[in-house]
Length: 83
Image (cartoon, rainbow, N blue to C red; front, side):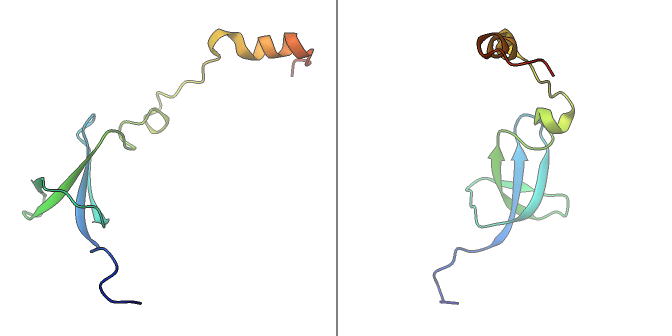
């Protein structure tokens, strides 16, 4: 491995701004903002808009919607049989 070409891999907190969920992990991302973690130390915090705590698929609020009857329109147009 070449020296001095890889970014620094260090502990970072990722915080979901919509659900206030946070996780401490290691990353090469950096931030000027800091947050005090449960262990009493300060870590850089990267704010994200969506995580498993707020994503509809993981929260169980996921709905499959056939908006405008697209499946029925396709079947009418191409004569596809209903399953």
